[in-house]
Image 1 (cartoon, rainbow, N blue to C red):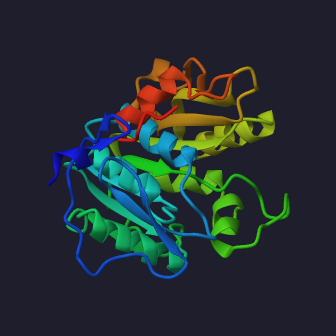
Image 2: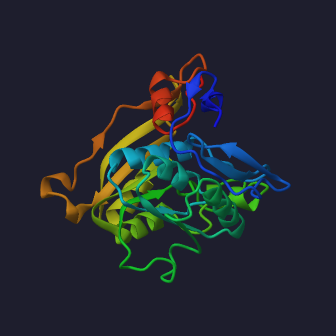
Length: 283
């Protein structure tokens, strides 16, 4: 490999270098885009595309459970959260579950491109269906980027991928909590992202956790721009029964994470988050 290909705008790309099959490439209507390090992801040009939310979910989950050996990604879409986490957890084995056929097709292409197929199983189906995940399948880390809004609460959009990613077509935050709780191994962590503004949305996370027997052990609010109210929250949960009694009703609220400063530049802390996930620290 030409050493100059390791650099992007002065940044040295970290991580493994895949050897993708020669015949694999974007089809009409698709793009092949950078993910972590040398990892790439296939996306529809007019469909759902991975975002900062996905980066944050993968970062927070792997940050809160860095020793995970078995990882489950619920509602995995095109595979962005799972593959970001797989880049960071290089010895872990993954199971991802996604209902949309088109998203599963793209995720499988990306898994082949990134050399992940031996440790990365992609299942098509609704994770709420008993046939998709066995009750005896246990995971150290469960990841989730649930749809944010109930059906009927907004304009659906112009593409099926976008609709299912934004609106609760197949499951709510409560469903994510219930399935995560069921599949967590002893001491396992469920990490997810969800809106916290308006406050009713944050309350939905708290209610979902309580009903599933989970404790929100730590949480962090995300402001997209400095000086603006936080719109998103990151949550790390564990089964309450796996914790000492004095921690079962305890939540540590971390300092707010800001994505962009008031002048539009990427915040220095988020730059370090990007670096830890193999993303270029561009401002």
